[in-house]
Image (cartoon, rainbow, N blue to C red; front, side, top):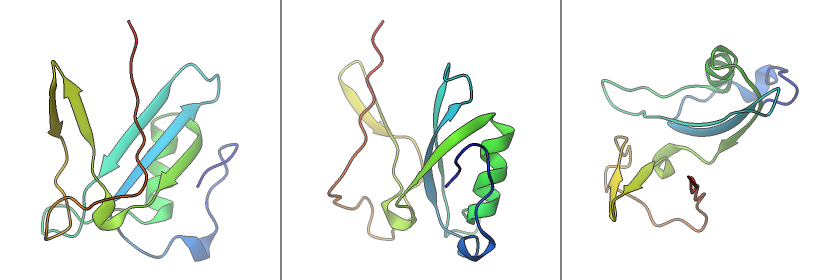
Length: 107
């Protein structure tokens, strides 16, 4: 979605959906993963340009936008318990997905 802090092309910025994004600051000191809910009265999602603006505000330089829509789900796993931390936008709940991103923080 964003490379070297450049905005997306206008033709890529039309559809509004829930989205999951991962980005890194220019100095590569931070990685931020964020999820935006959508398709409800309270959460509409973002188009590409809006997601780009959020990334810029967070100081992200290179960003990957993952498949969104009803597949947008973010989990945390603490003390042996997993929890969904966003509002799943698919009316049928969490979807089965082929690919996942797993991040483990080592202390």
